[in-house]
Image 1 (tube, rainbow, N blue to C red):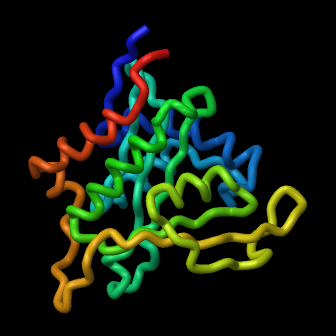
Image 2: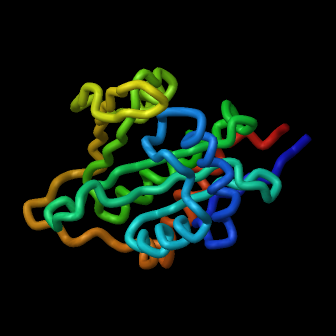
Length: 201
Protein backbone atom coordinates (compact mmCIF):
# COMPACT_ATOMS: atom_id res chain seq x y z
CA UNK A 1 0.00 0.00 0.00
CA UNK A 2 1.44 3.35 -1.06
CA UNK A 3 1.84 5.96 1.68
CA UNK A 4 2.04 9.72 1.14
CA UNK A 5 5.32 11.09 2.53
CA UNK A 6 5.74 14.74 3.39
CA UNK A 7 8.55 16.64 5.10
CA UNK A 8 7.71 20.17 6.21
CA UNK A 9 8.29 22.80 8.87
CA UNK A 10 6.59 22.07 12.18
CA UNK A 11 3.61 24.20 13.20
CA UNK A 12 1.86 24.67 16.55
CA UNK A 13 -0.80 22.16 15.48
CA UNK A 14 1.92 19.46 15.39
CA UNK A 15 2.90 19.92 19.03
CA UNK A 16 0.48 17.39 20.58
CA UNK A 17 1.84 14.73 18.23
CA UNK A 18 5.43 15.82 18.93
CA UNK A 19 4.77 15.56 22.66
CA UNK A 20 3.31 12.08 22.18
CA UNK A 21 6.47 11.00 20.33
CA UNK A 22 8.86 12.54 22.85
CA UNK A 23 7.15 11.58 26.13
CA UNK A 24 8.16 7.86 26.10
CA UNK A 25 11.82 8.82 25.60
CA UNK A 26 11.53 10.91 28.78
CA UNK A 27 9.47 8.47 30.82
CA UNK A 28 11.07 5.16 29.82
CA UNK A 29 14.69 5.89 28.86
CA UNK A 30 17.77 7.94 29.67
CA UNK A 31 18.03 9.11 26.06
CA UNK A 32 16.55 12.36 27.30
CA UNK A 33 17.75 13.66 30.67
CA UNK A 34 14.40 15.34 31.28
CA UNK A 35 12.51 13.81 34.18
CA UNK A 36 9.02 14.92 33.08
CA UNK A 37 7.61 15.29 29.57
CA UNK A 38 7.00 18.90 28.52
CA UNK A 39 3.49 20.21 28.18
CA UNK A 40 2.17 21.34 24.81
CA UNK A 41 2.49 24.90 26.11
CA UNK A 42 6.16 24.26 26.91
CA UNK A 43 6.73 22.99 23.38
CA UNK A 44 4.88 25.96 21.92
CA UNK A 45 7.23 28.33 23.76
CA UNK A 46 10.21 26.33 22.53
CA UNK A 47 8.98 26.43 18.93
CA UNK A 48 8.49 30.18 19.15
CA UNK A 49 12.05 30.62 20.44
CA UNK A 50 13.61 28.60 17.62
CA UNK A 51 12.90 30.97 14.75
CA UNK A 52 16.57 30.89 13.72
CA UNK A 53 16.62 27.11 13.38
CA UNK A 54 14.69 24.52 11.34
CA UNK A 55 12.19 22.35 13.17
CA UNK A 56 10.93 19.68 10.79
CA UNK A 57 8.29 16.96 10.89
CA UNK A 58 7.82 13.91 8.68
CA UNK A 59 4.24 12.97 7.87
CA UNK A 60 3.14 9.58 6.60
CA UNK A 61 -0.43 9.76 5.33
CA UNK A 62 -0.93 12.88 7.43
CA UNK A 63 0.37 11.33 10.67
CA UNK A 64 3.48 12.81 12.27
CA UNK A 65 5.98 9.94 12.33
CA UNK A 66 8.99 11.85 13.61
CA UNK A 67 10.59 15.23 14.00
CA UNK A 68 14.03 16.82 13.99
CA UNK A 69 15.29 20.23 14.95
CA UNK A 70 18.37 22.29 15.72
CA UNK A 71 19.08 24.79 18.45
CA UNK A 72 21.85 26.87 19.92
CA UNK A 73 24.80 24.95 21.34
CA UNK A 74 25.54 27.74 23.82
CA UNK A 75 24.12 31.23 24.22
CA UNK A 76 27.36 33.23 23.79
CA UNK A 77 27.32 34.98 20.42
CA UNK A 78 30.61 33.43 19.27
CA UNK A 79 28.82 30.05 19.21
CA UNK A 80 26.17 31.24 16.75
CA UNK A 81 27.60 29.24 13.81
CA UNK A 82 27.34 25.91 15.67
CA UNK A 83 24.09 24.09 16.41
CA UNK A 84 22.95 21.13 18.48
CA UNK A 85 20.70 18.69 16.63
CA UNK A 86 17.97 16.39 17.93
CA UNK A 87 15.73 13.78 16.31
CA UNK A 88 12.92 11.51 17.54
CA UNK A 89 10.86 8.94 15.62
CA UNK A 90 7.81 6.98 16.72
CA UNK A 91 8.82 3.34 17.35
CA UNK A 92 6.21 2.02 14.92
CA UNK A 93 7.70 4.16 12.12
CA UNK A 94 11.35 3.32 12.73
CA UNK A 95 13.43 1.52 10.09
CA UNK A 96 11.48 3.15 7.29
CA UNK A 97 13.95 5.93 6.52
CA UNK A 98 12.10 8.58 8.55
CA UNK A 99 15.15 9.50 10.64
CA UNK A 100 17.46 9.50 7.61
CA UNK A 101 15.08 11.66 5.62
CA UNK A 102 14.63 14.17 8.43
CA UNK A 103 18.35 14.42 9.20
CA UNK A 104 19.32 14.69 5.53
CA UNK A 105 16.97 17.63 5.10
CA UNK A 106 17.90 19.23 8.43
CA UNK A 107 21.66 19.13 7.83
CA UNK A 108 21.25 20.37 4.27
CA UNK A 109 19.21 23.35 5.47
CA UNK A 110 21.64 24.17 8.28
CA UNK A 111 24.58 24.22 5.86
CA UNK A 112 22.72 26.49 3.44
CA UNK A 113 21.77 28.83 6.29
CA UNK A 114 25.46 29.34 7.02
CA UNK A 115 26.01 27.15 10.06
CA UNK A 116 29.46 25.52 10.03
CA UNK A 117 29.13 22.67 12.52
CA UNK A 118 26.50 20.48 14.16
CA UNK A 119 26.83 18.72 17.50
CA UNK A 120 24.83 15.71 18.68
CA UNK A 121 24.72 14.85 22.37
CA UNK A 122 24.18 11.11 22.95
CA UNK A 123 23.55 9.31 26.24
CA UNK A 124 25.48 6.05 26.15
CA UNK A 125 25.25 3.21 25.58
CA UNK A 126 23.20 3.90 22.46
CA UNK A 127 24.82 1.99 19.57
CA UNK A 128 21.93 2.67 17.19
CA UNK A 129 22.21 6.45 17.57
CA UNK A 130 25.99 6.32 17.31
CA UNK A 131 25.85 4.25 14.12
CA UNK A 132 23.21 6.60 12.70
CA UNK A 133 25.34 9.69 13.34
CA UNK A 134 28.48 8.01 12.05
CA UNK A 135 26.64 7.30 8.79
CA UNK A 136 26.30 11.07 8.32
CA UNK A 137 29.97 11.69 9.06
CA UNK A 138 29.70 12.75 12.69
CA UNK A 139 32.85 12.09 14.72
CA UNK A 140 33.14 11.52 18.46
CA UNK A 141 34.81 14.55 20.04
CA UNK A 142 34.24 14.02 23.74
CA UNK A 143 32.94 11.80 26.52
CA UNK A 144 31.61 13.03 29.85
CA UNK A 145 31.56 10.21 32.34
CA UNK A 146 28.61 9.81 34.71
CA UNK A 147 27.35 13.37 34.28
CA UNK A 148 23.61 12.57 34.44
CA UNK A 149 21.60 10.66 37.03
CA UNK A 150 18.31 9.13 35.92
CA UNK A 151 16.36 5.94 36.61
CA UNK A 152 18.65 4.98 39.46
CA UNK A 153 21.91 5.13 37.53
CA UNK A 154 24.66 7.53 36.45
CA UNK A 155 25.01 7.93 32.69
CA UNK A 156 27.81 8.92 30.34
CA UNK A 157 27.23 11.43 27.57
CA UNK A 158 29.17 11.61 24.33
CA UNK A 159 29.48 14.63 22.05
CA UNK A 160 29.60 13.99 18.30
CA UNK A 161 30.45 16.71 15.79
CA UNK A 162 29.98 17.23 12.04
CA UNK A 163 31.53 19.96 9.90
CA UNK A 164 28.78 21.43 7.75
CA UNK A 165 30.88 23.83 5.71
CA UNK A 166 33.96 25.99 5.50
CA UNK A 167 34.83 28.47 8.24
CA UNK A 168 35.14 31.90 6.59
CA UNK A 169 37.59 34.44 7.99
CA UNK A 170 34.74 36.93 8.40
CA UNK A 171 31.47 34.94 8.52
CA UNK A 172 28.08 36.48 8.04
CA UNK A 173 25.44 35.67 10.65
CA UNK A 174 23.51 32.52 9.73
CA UNK A 175 20.26 33.01 7.86
CA UNK A 176 17.18 32.57 10.02
CA UNK A 177 14.84 29.67 9.32
CA UNK A 178 12.08 32.17 8.55
CA UNK A 179 14.22 33.76 5.83
CA UNK A 180 15.47 30.36 4.63
CA UNK A 181 11.91 29.24 4.00
CA UNK A 182 11.66 31.94 1.31
CA UNK A 183 14.59 30.45 -0.64
CA UNK A 184 14.15 27.91 -3.42
CA UNK A 185 16.57 25.50 -1.75
CA UNK A 186 14.32 25.08 1.30
CA UNK A 187 11.77 23.00 -0.61
CA UNK A 188 14.54 21.21 -2.51
CA UNK A 189 16.12 20.04 0.77
CA UNK A 190 12.78 18.79 2.09
CA UNK A 191 12.13 16.93 -1.16
CA UNK A 192 15.53 15.23 -0.98
CA UNK A 193 14.80 14.12 2.56
CA UNK A 194 11.31 12.90 1.71
CA UNK A 195 12.71 10.80 -1.14
CA UNK A 196 14.63 8.71 1.42
CA UNK A 197 11.51 7.72 3.35
CA UNK A 198 9.83 4.47 2.38
CA UNK A 199 6.44 5.17 0.81
CA UNK A 200 4.89 1.77 1.46
CA UNK A 201 3.32 0.35 4.58
